[in-house]
Length: 181
Image (cartoon, rainbow, N blue to C red; front, side, top):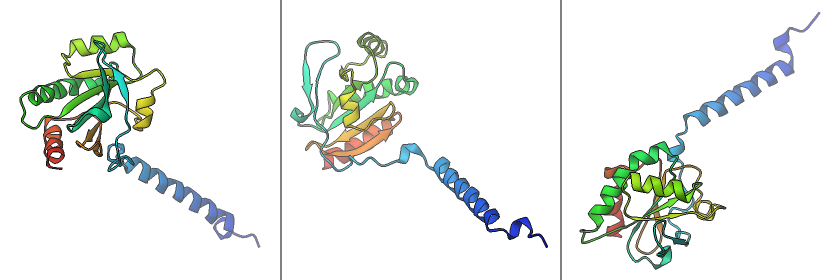
């Protein structure tokens, strides 16, 4: 007498493998990539030295004594266009604040010409720079897309990472946290 297909061990092993793959895919697709925690949270921010996009001024992160909003952006990034106005408005408020934050923008995977045109188009007046051609700064921060923003306290420790565009509400919430530390 022939064994029925479902009585064979290979049949159930195959179904178990298929069910396992479905479970893995279901978990992967249900995980929001914007909620993935950064391993840099609570650790010192990687230091860097950059030259200003429009000028000869240099900036070294470790020399800043205020909290920092470090934004990674690119001229080709659609979401960066939306957050450009939000970041600029926040930066302007810092000029008159009794507890100012320093806003820094690092353009990655971009040409100097395109980054300058973007900055001019969106009226960016805070310190802007280009990452080097090999993307050293972006690699040090584990950037895998733009925009991404890091909130760094006055002691140089990363306290929060935002994947995707920032909002005025988020900037103000993070400022409250950073100045209270």
